[in-house]
Length: 253
Ligand SMILES: C[S@@+](CC[C@H](N)C(=O)[O-])C[C@H]1O[C@@H](n2cnc3c(N)ncnc32)[C@H](O)[C@@H]1O
Image (cartoon, protein in one colour):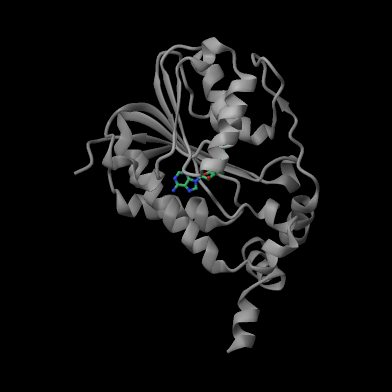
């Protein structure tokens, strides 16, 4: 029994799992994940430089935020993508930056304070709700929502032997289940016709395309997929980053 658990957990199980998904590409992709990240994109318009992975900037920009809009960043800390959204709003409209972790929220507040001018900051509120339950207190309020979901973050895993030793496919399933609840809550909070970007830094299909399939079964006819993109570091030198832009079509029955 103990042997079976060992087989399903840890570095070797991790490699078996992703070799089955990516085939011959896996050793190359794993090596690219092991290389240090390159947070190279420079965001202009900030009072102090902030460097973010280029693929993360593109994911936040995929939301297409315009000045005057009501925008929600559901899982915002430490705040790199919130900066992109705040720059797009130009101090006009409203930006709610939410994160359930109080430690990470502290970091988020510091990032916003240190990098944004008072004018860009004036329309931002920081909140600490559970994103899976957001629909309980606000419905059909936002023009645009970014859901940058907590995910398996395999780049982080391969740099942390202690975390990799604890890896199991079960964790992916738990995170996907949580992200699905967040997607449902985000859809409720969005105005009809509003836009939602779902993003992760995972290479696991269950947390990316696979989750969109489950979301389509759970909320059929409520949204349509406008565009999606997966950036992998073996090809692009940045990422991993998956994002999908969705449009809310109707009132949810
Ligand atoms: C991928 S990180 C967000 C990164 C951030 N968007 C950025 O660009 O800097 C996911 C965040 O989700 C937060 N989180 C996890 N579970 C949550 C929940 N149930 N409700 C709200 N936030 C949650 C975590 O604290 C973490 O900061």
